[in-house]
Length: 293
Image 1 (tube, rainbow, N blue to C red):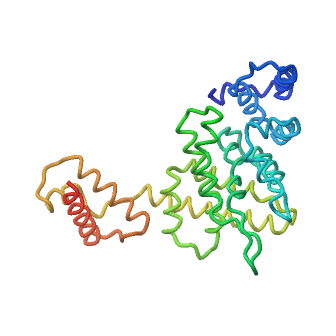
Image 2: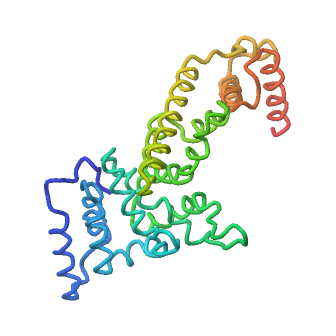
Image 3: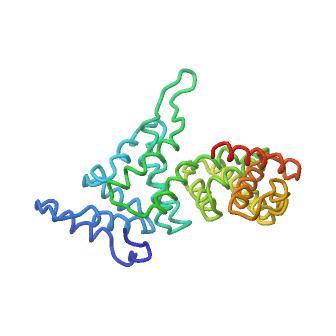
């Protein structure tokens, strides 16, 4: 896969695509999937990707390379998920030109096709479509011959937690639930990108509803910033020396592992940032590790 910095936005991606169509129409079986995706990536990096993506759809190429997108067409009564997705990708292009974030935006709803279910008195539901969608990514990118595991993992993570910020935008949301999301996302850049996707996913034509959602997401973003600042100032309740004294051991890599697990438990809110609680926690971990050995 080419690095996104090598894609030229100055070229007309549709011009290159027409060349590919010419070869296909004339039965030349020489166009590789890498070439098609190379041109598709240029379309994604355009300011209005929906134009090129829709062109892929009209000529039948989208059905060949990304049938998962065709599957979500028309599965909602009040909105067509395919056209909604095109709008989301255009929206995110106003915030970012990150190729991998745009891929996440393009595929964020593909799990809805497999999770669609009608429940009486509720209507159509798509429970866990984000989780299912994330699990579909490996096979999709294997087919498209993407090889960079780091980028694939990033896309899967963005899709998996794509609805999480919306469920956490309440003013009553606890810090521990936000901390858990931060830990799951891995770094501050990923959480920022996740919020950009959530903002882009608001495609309602109701101006006041759209404004309300965006204000709540901005508020949520501020909460994350404050928690991140606290996280950076994190002070261990128990030191490496304490651990060595407790277990009567010398300095070793196990101490670092115990401290890492302890920090994660405190950030997730599993235990309090307290010396006695921390001591009890690492004792349990140490006994468990010894038993496994």
